[in-house]
Amino acid sequence: MTKEKIKEEAEKQLLFRIIALIGVVLFLGIFITNVKADTITFKFKNPSFSGVNTSSHYLTIENQEFNRKMTIKAEIKALQDEIERDKENTTLARFIRNLESRIYAQLSRQLVENLFGETPSDSGTLELEGNTIEYSIVDGIITLTITDPDGNITTIQLPVGDFSF
Image (cartoon, rainbow, N blue to C red):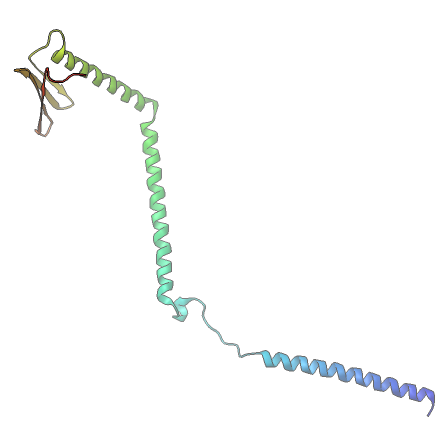
């Protein structure tokens, strides 16, 4: 045999070994993949379909719905309160409150003048928003009788000379 034939024979054997090695690697790769494989089974993940932990799933959904409804109610209430505050804080509303306060202060001052002033009166009547306020001084005791529109009566008695500031 000549050198060329020996060389050719060596190349064929090398090529055969490389192909055999690639074949073994492919065979082992496929076999190992099949060894790891499992049968494909379908399972529902949603508890509504599978029945696993269904009650806790339903409770979670109910809690989420309840919390969302309560949040919406709270937002609506907050918005209504804000609208109410805005109505009460208008310039006209503040003016009316200030005017009422001054009128009540003036009425109060006049009532005090009639009771304790330089020329006090012994009795009197005042009609205020459906309430009747009657006062009288008998034996050094001031008696205030307040009658509301429903007919309920409140009586207050004050001694004239027993208190001081």
